[in-house]
Image 1 (tube, rainbow, N blue to C red):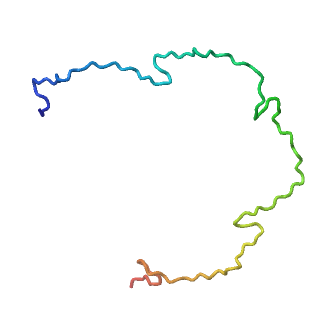
Image 2 (image 1 turned 60 degrees about the vertical axis):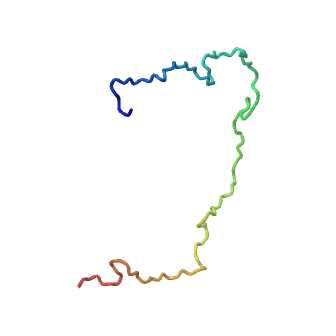
Length: 123
């Protein structure tokens, strides 16, 4: 039957009766399980024992954290000029090994609507 819906035809299926749905159990995923009381009954908590503090670093108790060493800094040498490049202080920058050639003007390229050396007057 290929039609939207015929009159007088029941649209229920009598071949597959509806089955009652089963109750779903809540999943047992942790760390807190449903239905489990959270209490510690196996190891009673004992109070902490107050004792002497142990001398461990980096700061030990009873030791003053201050620097008392201050030497007299007299007669220090004068630092020189830093020798960092590309220009070194006190070094003359000149090229004595290769003479610079003179620049020569090349021939003009004959490209484009305007040419070099051609009269533009329209006579």
